Length: 442
Image 1 (cartoon, helix red, strand yellow):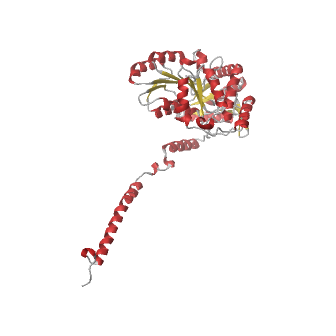
Image 2: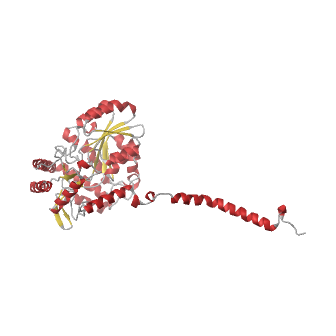
């Protein structure tokens, strides 16, 4: 008799059993992959293709609609020179109302010289986070000047205005806190609140009575509470009652934050912002926020306030701690621009006069200027995105550059053209522009 292998099974049968066992194990190993492939096949393309992303679909739809209506895209036009009261686009000079160069300091020889000197000494980049090895004397010089302007203990400069609000609100507040904001607040505030996890509530635009009632009802339900407003609203060109806000914040024992981005250099006898306009002490507001890209001819944001606030942000705010330090030429340019504003208050006075003149002429021409108080920003409300885009293009054909603000940036019925004023605009340029807009809207 032939010898049986271990186990007493014939070798052929044993081979077949081993083969089947291996096949079964392989099948078991493959089944999850097959299942995953099957599940993956059921994932809609919209979830792994940016061409199907809702945001792109919206952009594409708007572009197609504009094309069908014969409307040229008014956005991302390339400026070939300094954009102030005038600008150069595709070799043609335009009267320009689409830049934040309120005091004509972007491109000013003194500010340019300061930026160039900073490049020669420090290069074009700080090349590191300021806490590590990116600190430069230009940073502290700018921050000391900002602290003086706001009559506060200290200030801190960030590399982005939008990121300033996001990281400061995200760092200082949390899920047990409440942030109450004006309904027309900037997107950066909304993003900062979302990051913080704090409860968000809004109150009707500049309605301090509604704010007072809201706080009376909600204040004791939260730990820290912040009121967030703007010093000058960039869409409408109006401003809040700051003394009234200070009274409310003191009575309810909450923090008050003022975004002074468009107010610094435009409001007040000296152009020192909304506190200068109302004669309010710097310490009456807990968090002063602003940007360097408007009056101060640079790029970035800043916070001014008490030393405890600034030290907290300097050492712990992620958007400062983990970001490269502000580029030296930008810090130098902004400090020089701020110094120039302080030394030449006539620039502020001229801006205010030109803004008032534009508002008066626009109203006389029957244009809807909304809530504008005639300080640096004057909207012309058209009532629809289509009308706003058409008016912008028609003015562009006449040598006037002004951008439309359309849905969803504003409600559809509030679509508008937004005119940013400069102290360098002339009355002749304003007259020509207002007359052209009135004729087109006719």
